[in-house]
Length: 353
Length: 260
Image 1: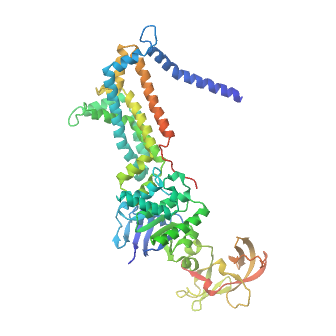
Image 2 (image 1 turned 90 degrees about the vertical axis):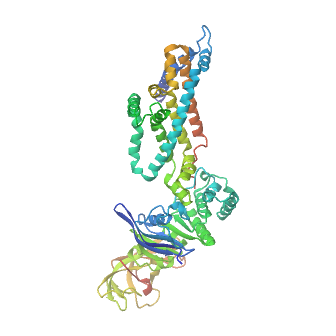
Image 3 (image 1 turned 180 degrees about the horizontal axis):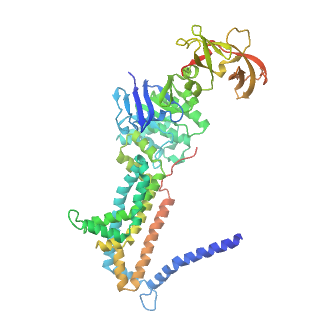
């Protein structure tokens, strides 16, 4: 049975429809990220699961129970906020035990659970500290422990790492994922950071303008984006318009150069215009004789990015990025060099609009 | 140039201090002259031995305490709700809270007497009316103090965090919001206390025992005792201000935020 289900959820504020016909089923123990730019409706959707917003239409079901109109304090849902939201008047231990105290659990049980949670977040010595005595990363770990202490049916995380610096963000996201896996808890994670979503999730829901653009594993979202928005939002991508030459053989043309895709032209006619995308790392200079997908180019720019070197080439009137691993023993081309680039058929992605 | 400016600054500071403290000092010295030819605390002893003083002072203490309680019960949930649910109404609510500054107390008291001196609302003789009136009078100080306190914490996120952990409105208000704005509430409460302790018109026209009307009567009949009372009033107000400063400086207000 599906653990959490969002059926046809919409949310309207005045005349503004911020979430449109959102459908999603989440399995128990799954880590799902809502990824999208600001204002795409991801936080509103999360808030509808938490109960802070009531959907204008649709239904939220948790373990088979309809919780659409249930008050937030009646749902067994843990939430971690971007601004930590620790209670400043309480110690770390009191913060973690707050939910259990509300549930009128006995003192010993609370003490035991708080100790367990402090061990889980590696802050055993900080139980008596006040939130203002902790760093941002520590505060967010306490917030996570507080949300988990109540044994929630689902854990909601609303951009929990946005207020932290880059290094702590990376270590804490790994910690969150490890804790989620250890406890086997279902988690919904809101972020606008694609790297965060790709690294932490079982599945990613990419949202734009209140709608789901694509749902898939990080691998699918990155390698096989299905819409122009997803292609542009997740990672760096070369996109251009191509003309369909032969739908049966998936043959396309860009600026007089013929390219072959592996799929995606079944419903197209000869002469149709389509948007295609190629990841920079799927493009290569031709090292050996190749018969298909050969594009004459000139090197326009070379950018050193550490482990990767990004080369900008001009193919006809299209500027493409090409990423190669940084190998100090291989010579890089020079700006202005004429060369040829190629990619496999599978690398040519035909996007839905 | 710079040192000349400093001299002028000091000149005005000293002028200000003299302007405020000389009359007080003169009053204090005058209050010590109740016994001919010697300085003594006789006038203070006379005041403390007067049963009317005890009665009026304790009555004012009671009115002030009740006003603070009613004020907190009314204004904390209101300010909390406005900030959380109807932030757009904040300007309108702030304007309403300032009305007691605009309406003179004498106009206000006549309005109260006319409205509440005949059935069905015949409560003009009830202490309830006086406390209600004082609550309105203290509203600008108390409400704004609470509102400033709420501004210093993230009300929405703290409320939602508490809700997600299962807390209801009562718990949120008493265990999360109130403890985090207690210094602001104390500030407002002491200001309200000082206002009520020195208020004359409402108590006089609603015919209730209070400290200020007692002082007014005393001024007409005695010489040194009113001076002693004036000094005591100042001492009381300063004690209130001192407590506000002490509590504010200490760990009363929970600190928000943290390093990274």
